[in-house]
Amino acid sequence: MLCDAASIREGLLHVLGAGITFVIRPNYPAPLNASIGLLFGARDLPEAGEDHAFSVTLRREDGEAEPGEIKANVKFQRPPDGSRLQSLPVALDLHGTGLSAPGAYEILVSVDGHDRLMIPFEAKVGGEEPTAPFE
Image 1 (cartoon, rainbow, N blue to C red):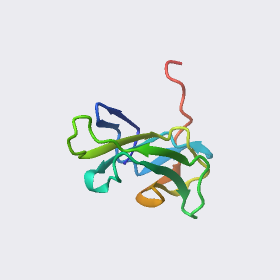
Image 2: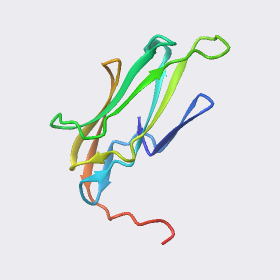
Image 3: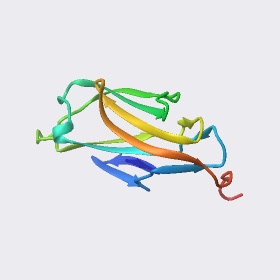
Image 4: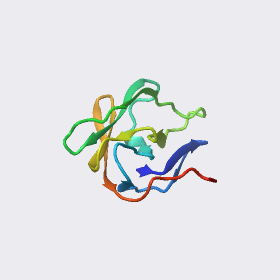
């Protein structure tokens, strides 16, 4: 899910302002200023103990990718007590990711080159420039 913020603590995914379907910025280019919270279920998890290529790409409606693809190698680990892994939380900060223009976008999440999730949203024009807090 696209959200205001996401973090992981003690194996739990914490999200704030989840379910973003559009963002409003006064002008473009503009920062996305959002995060992604993912929770992979046990049936969706690749083999534990092996490295897997994880990537997140932001694409415009014309299919062109915005700069700043996130790539990482992730090793999914079984719990230390040997119990079966039920879910894997992932929190990704996309606040520094840029939006080049208003329009439709999608965030594509891939593991080992296989598309696993697509999160659509729209960028609109409106509002005012944000001001720094406590000015």
